[in-house]
Structure formats: C-alpha cells, structure tokens
Length: 110
Image (cartoon, rainbow, N blue to C red; front, side):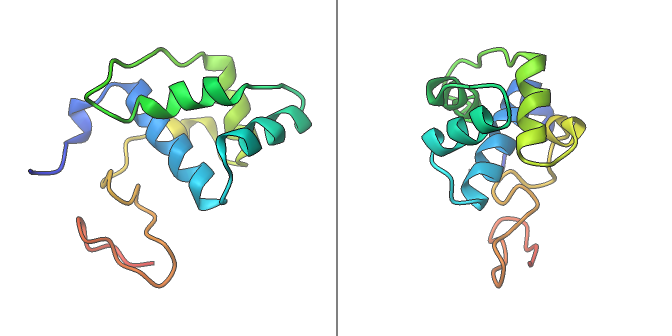
C-alpha cells in the first residue's frame, strides 16, 4: 500500500498524528498527558486526547479539534501551534525518526 499523501488528510488528522508523535516521543501515556496539561493550567481528559489522536486513523471518522485545545497542547509540548497544523513529509515517522534509526518509509535518519 503506498503511503498516504498529506493532501488526502484533513487538518484534524494532521493534528492527531502530531499529538500522538509528540506524546509517545516523551514516553507519556494518555493519562500522563492529561496530568501535564492539568499542571500547566487546563485539565484535558485522557479521553479527549485519545479522540484527537484517533483522528490520525483514516478508517475512523475525524472529530473536530477545538482551537483552544490545540494552542494549549502546543504549549504543553513546547512547540508552536502551527507545527501541529503542518503536514509532515512522511506520516510514518512524522519527520522525526527515533535517535539512531532511519525511517523505512522515507529514509530519513535521526
């Protein structure tokens, strides 16, 4: 199956993929991200984060991402909000293969 093109995915799917990648890079569970968000001033339930992340799955219907949540989560991850809105060149590694590895889909190396 060929990789999906960024143009095939709505913004909510791109945001979900970024949130999932950032969370897993840090080794955080959904609950831990909820705790981090609460400590930063706005509790976001793990179920809400799970719904946002599931947007990355094209076989599921996408749910809208609330702009306030997007901006707040960007702050929790210390990234700019527009980074969560920008489609990566490669959805397999989200343009960030793990240290010491290369992506089998795009060939990018860390």
